[in-house]
Length: 333
Image 1: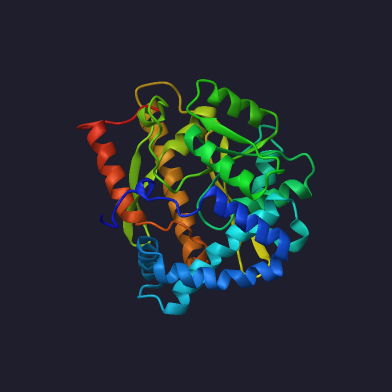
Image 2: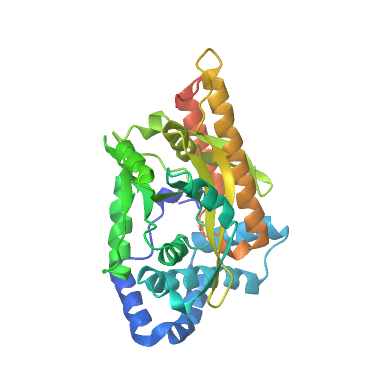
């Protein structure tokens, strides 16, 4: 099978049993000793990772503008392994083991003070779980992840294996009441996060695939497809959107970084050009998102954790969406 396949066809290497073993190692040996175990794990994966490691090397070549050195390839894998291990401690609320700084907090606060919650859009860049430290520092701040139901079940099973006592909240898309649940969560001052760097097709009957499509955007020197689904969701809810990521800087250091992304609180006036104006604002938000993501990949290249052929997967999804839209077609928000 070709490496240039959609990421959804690649079998996940981790299992609930493996995650339970990781939890045992992390909680029994402690973080300092557990981190030593990451070195042989990273080395094994680097040698036998197959398509994932080839995708890593391709990504690093794009970032550095040259083939990566062996040490750089190892550093990428070890960064990923480190953040996976740290999920155990972050989900268990053991924030005292980490040095977490925050950049751009004013952008987050500005939206939160509006009283309508915060809709965050991130990526598979760094650690989303680091955001839980912010909830710990600000008592009462409620954080939820937004994803399709099938993925929500998989994520819940994996996270329960890592931290069975952790309080996790996932809002599953695809149900008839999903939009209402998300709107009520935000109206109650909650924080909801989506990851927008994978073009995932909605499950049958979910309906989202009828309203969203993938768009090719320049990313690290070549067009890659990004889904407009998260941005259309924000537009439908009429919410401002803040970009968020939890960058891993090695050792015990993380950085929560926020940046303004888009403001969909005001819809275009009704009329012949309303749909085109809305599509343009969504495209502008997606372009800014891709630019922010590219800038962070160049700044901290080892935080990118999409271990599949990102550009080939995007090509396939964009082609499928273009065919579905038809000549001159579009997708209604």
